[in-house]
Length: 310
Image 1 (cartoon, rainbow, N blue to C red):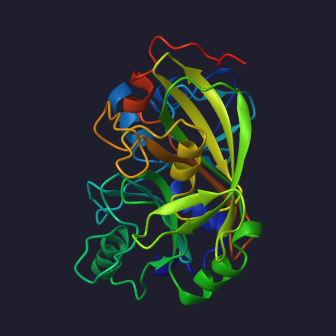
Image 2 (cartoon, rainbow, N blue to C red):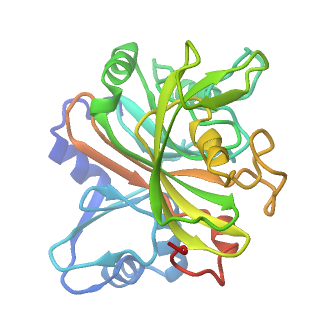
């Protein structure tokens, strides 16, 4: 990357991507196969490896609808020293920050020096590439939660993000599979959150003293008699916020061994951060990253209705 510091943004993009303009209505996978003479499997590999953007928005959806005039960028190559780790996948990287997709089962940052974490994976990756930087944690996902995260690559960028988080990050959403049939199509949950002496977060309608106000917006996508698929948008980012708030309304997240009711149909916490939209802290450019919903979540709703009973 250091060799590209003297390039303009356009020159740098051109050196890394094939840029293609859509001429007719189609889907992304079919467009890649036809426009680049790729095999279906090769096109899927490039998509799965986060090598494609549509109008500068990263996407991995095979069935992403395309319209005439849209611009598709395809990465020309995967770097030979690409990060290969079962827990951490790099979605985007530049000289200031890195966006990853974290799997469940790994900490965002270690509580003690010996704990394995996504930060450690990134620091080792930077060291192998001889980058003089480390990953600075600016927000977290619980160990059991999967999805998109951003790390700063300098103290300067970390401070900008921390001091202006709510102005910079304008859309952060999660998908969750929860227990029971949701009663409403959407709503907002508001309460005060505070840790007890056992470090378990509890919710209160009024400030218990030292509490932090938390706001979660939800939209129900699918329901069955046993489960519901819910999209959640955070207005605040408190510890365990979504997990506690879903417990509050009687629909704890499936697989939650801390705030749940014991229901664990797929052997993991059913919470995934699928969208991260923000303004680049240095350039102000709009950055949009999304992942597909986890397939294991969706399998629970093969015979679901699309809307809850209102």
